[in-house]
Amino acid sequence: MKNSKKFTDEEIIEALENSIKFAEQEDVHDPETKKFLADSAISAKETLESIRIIQNHNSRISELIKLGFKEESVILTVTIFEILMKNFFWKSKDDWFYIPSHQFSELSFDEKLNIRKKIQKYLKDIHLFDEYLRNLYLYQNFSPNSEIECLYETLHKNERKINFQNLTAKNGVKNAYLTFLDIDISMSLDPDPKKSIEKWARLNSLIKERHEIIHKGKKSSLKEEQILEILNSVDSITHSIIRKKYAYVKSNNDRAISVLEQKLGRKLNHI
Image (cartoon, rainbow, N blue to C red):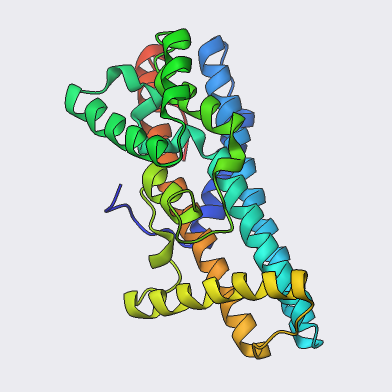
């Protein structure tokens, strides 16, 4: 996945719209195929909606900044960042570790071992590994992806253990995305690595300033253009996540469609 093509927003939106059209119009009778197409349409619509939500948020906050509502802009920017990171993370459960066709049981021994080491380290750091093992004992082999399903269940029941507003802690947002989705969000704020790190530091400062504004009633020390720059940095992070997610979903769908075509004995007119 590290060498995935970097799709533009326009390419993603066009492809998603075509995927929805294909999934809703393709006339098939096989139940498995119908379910696959329905799931594809839902996934495409959710991703498309995520892009539109981000665009709407940015427009609203930009207007607040222009009107001089700096404190409100800081609070809203951090709140939206936290919500977007949290929503993307949980909705991307099927993309965790980029397992082909969501079949953990079909991976090689080395692939399984690599993922299990990542899971063990992450859960030990946030004191959930023992609970995960108990869940796995109960539910293992229930599905080809039961280990990831158990991981999701363990984390979601203890979702407060992940702090999506903390950028640097072991239970913070950066470590979660790096572990589960192989995305270093600290390097996603700008194409230039050095500038990305600088903007990451500014985002961290903005989060700390939000705390001062809410809990101590302080004024924002940032200039309007600085807040706008950080807002654009958040936009860069979310779009980076969407681009990588789309590249994986497209690859997985292409693989699944190929299997379905062999099963049906004919070509599907997908994009």
